[in-house]
Amino acid sequence: MGTVYLGHDPFKNRDVAIKIAHPETEQIESARGRYRKLFFNEATVASRLKHPNIVEVFDVGIEEDVWYIVMEYVAGARTLHDFTRADKLMSMEDVVLNIFKCAKGLDYAHRHGVVHRDIKPKNIMLTADHELKLCDFSIALTTKSDVTESTQIHGYVGSPLYMSPEQIRMENVTNQTDIFSLGVVLFELITGQHPFEANSLPAITHKITSMAHPPLRELRSDAPKILAHIVDRTLSKDPATRYKMGLDLAADLSLVFARITPADEQLPGGEKFNLVNRLRFFDDFSEAEIWEVINASLWQEFPPDYEIILEGDVDNCFYVIITGEVMVRKGTRKVDTLMRGDCFGEMGFIARQQRSASVIATSPVTVMQVRATLMERASLNCQLRFHKVFLNTMVRRLSRTTEQYSQSGNK
Image: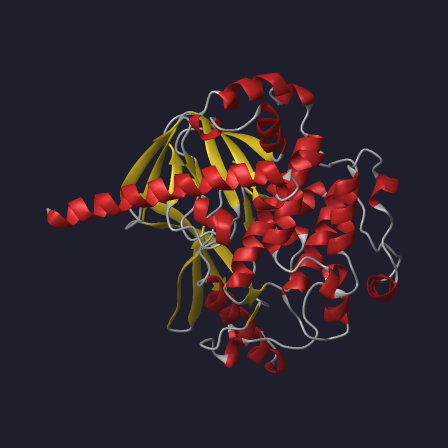
């Protein structure tokens, strides 16, 4: 579609990637209209999306006869295609973490009315800092009413190896289409082979639409059963039985982390209990209930300046600070400081609402991340205890926020 140049933005003092469209004169007459749609569809759709796991578009325009898109420059990036060969596979832990990030990026796009339609390893970049970036929204479909139809591409579009059954049959495309494609990527990253491998493209498309993929554990006996279940659900032929949203897939992937993290990277259970038992949040919990919460949580460590929660993101996690200190920031304004024993993420945990503020580590931080889906599996007494303390904590937080705003208003 074009040539990408490295550029520099002197106003923001940052490097940028500038995609320049190949001149229309180089296109055959019948392809010019479609080519123009592809180029400006990427610009129109991607410029609406601002998420840490999506390549950001800064500017779009036409200068005389030059079409251009100015995008985030991702230094030292590789695509996930580099890790789909059997002799180049990532660790299973890295695969799960990376697909988890992809699922969150897709969830954000879907909630903003964008279906990517071309999820494949070459459209997922891995940065030098091991972050994930979804890219190339040129054939994305948007359901937003304010997007002009002139940039939309319809019909048989995508990369056939990664198309969902409904894409191949040119049926209605939804969020579940991207979920299926991401499932194909997940299968490849774990096994080093395509789940619908065949000798020709027609044979592959036949397998995608009509035949089951090989059981994951036949190819990777070390894969947890829950991961095999996740793969089966993402690759379901029926969109209705796949994950509805990327966040649902991400929530299930989070269950896999504890099962595949090497034992020497996990704190011993007794040490976790001793750390948690000292926190005021758990003062009224019995020992058995504390263990239930520990077993329903994921322990994470973050370096200083790491954004644990990003304003505008959607998640259903609740966090308890085990060690360290974090800053709560609304836009550019610091609104609070939280430390050991404090918690954050209440509204996302309750209602999966967009995060209203960012939470940034100001020192090395260890948190206990609790997911609503995991707490639902705890005993009734533990759930009641947890929600009582949880609601009391939220009431105190709201009261303190109201008092702060009241005082600032009086000044």
